[in-house]
Each structure stands twice: as structure tokens, then as C-alpha cells.
Length: 336
Ligand SMILES: *[C@@H]1O[C@H](CO)[C@@H](O)[C@H](O)[C@H]1NC(C)=O
Image 1 (cartoon, protein in one colour):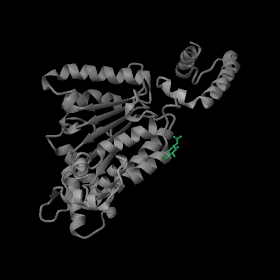
Image 2: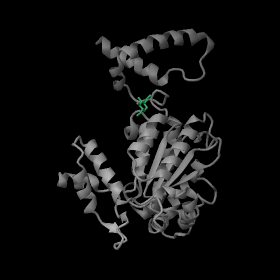
Image 3: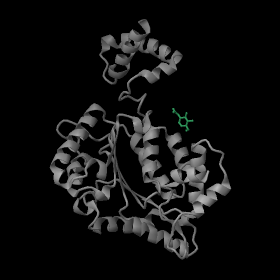
Image 4: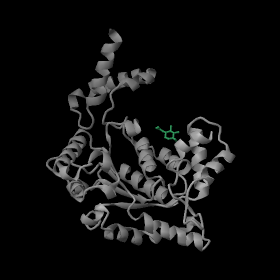
């Protein structure tokens, strides 16, 4: 019975204990409690796992080293994306009073690592990673499938975002398949991305919004292909080689939801992050990493076999894997 009571007591202290404004009289008591609590936690580290996740630095803080290492060792062929993401996220998280939420727009073809990067960001900010109750993932076809229910979706989404950020300022929202999202839906989240100090009494300035889409993917491939054909190292591709083409193509593509909105127009997106198409050698790296993740002994010959059997485009040159590293996981089971 006794241990159970302790858990409850600690839960209350950890979650709703004084954070910033501590009353002078209770300070010494709080400090005393904190000391006792720290001692307790230090000796019972594993009990920590019992606790409900809280909106506090113990649960939410960026591990910059971790993010840097993950981007370097787990993400392949994306020198531009890794650089931008690390800079954007660490700059934002270091800022105690950001003027607006961080808005990243990740662009590129299927399987190039957009989802994976948002997962790495979540894992290095939230102790519970994608399982954190402060990380929210939406995908157009799953969450907003019917275009005749847009009005319902709009109000649900707005309420969800408002409720989440009220509950925890450092919330993260990931929107997959942005190009399949109804323009009206994108419009409805626009106010949250802006420079408002408060919106209906809630500040969204510490939140992170990540948009994933294929929009602009083709023009990224075109640029990468030009480098490939010229025999230039892809690492020579710079953001400026892609930036204009990317934003214009996103803007002008009538099929993509962006076209209807003023996300770009109003400069609500802080960073456009291009993902390059993957070459054979990157796929090999993906397969080796997947083997490691599955606790299999990495075998180069098998990895090369898997990579060789994928579809590449353009057909004559076999420059880029059409589906990138997307289906590697399931393919591997077949080859092993
Ligand atoms: C941050 O990440 C590094 C590298 O993955 C890891 O060794 C370290 O323990 C992490 N630090 C914290 C505070 O989680």
C-alpha cells in the first residue's frame, strides 16, 4: 500500500509542482521537497517510468548532440536537410521567447526520409518520442478523408490544436500528405503559425509545426539529375540551387494545397527543407541500418542485392530509387 501512495504523491509534485513563479514563503518548503524528491528519483530511476508524462523540461528538452548524431548516422544522402533541421530546431529550442512557432515544410519524393526526420526531431525533444502525448500526427487521408466534412474537420482541428497548446506550450504537430489536405483546412491552421503574442488567450509561439509533402519533389529531382549528369558530387548541391524552384513549384502547382493558401505568401513557413532523391549507395546504407535495427548481422552482399532489385529512374540511367528507402523494411524479411 505504501509505495502506491508515494507514486501518487510524486505524480502530483512532478506534474503540477511550481514551475516558474514560486511564492516566497513556500520557496524553502519547495526546495526541501525538491531535494527530497531528487534524492528519491535518483535512487529509483526506473520508477520514473511509471509517471504520467508532464509538460516540463524533464520530459521536453532538446538533446542537440543526439539530434546531430542521429541525423549524421541514421539519415542518408540528405546533407541539406540535416543541416537545416539541426540549425532550425536547435535555434528555436534555445530561444526562451520565440516570436512565432517553428514551422518547417519538408519536401521531397517518397521514401527520402521526411517522416523519418520528423520522428528524429520528436525523439530528441520528447522523452517519449512519437509516443509523447505532446506530439500530434495527422495524415490527410486518414484523419480528413471526406471533403464534404471539411467544416467539421476544421473546427475539430482548431479545437485540438488549441487544447493541446493550452495543455502544453511545447507541443509538436506533424501534418503528413500536406499536398492532399483540403486548402480550407490549411487555411484554418494559418492563424496558429503567425506572429501573434496570443490568440484567444493562448500563445502558440513555442509550438512546432512540421508539414510533409511531395510538392516540389519533381523539381528537386530535376536539379539532382542535372548534377548527376554533369558528374558533379551531389554534396555540391546547395539550398540556393533548390530554393527558388521549390517555392515556385509549390506555389504554382494547382494540385497541391499550398497553392490556395498564403502560407508562403505571408512567410509563415520558416524553413523549406528539400529532400534529395536517393541513389543506389544510399539505399544500401538504409538496408544495412535496417538490419542493425532488426538485430540482424549487417550483410553487405544482401544489402546490395536488395538495393539492386529496386526500381530506379530514369530507366536508362538508373540514377534514383523511385521509392527511396520506403519499402526496405518489408523487403528485407523476404531476402533474409
Ligand atoms: C543525448 O544524446 C546522446 C547521443 O545519442 C546520448 O548519449 C545522451 O545520453 C543524450 N543525453 C540526454 C540528456 O538524454
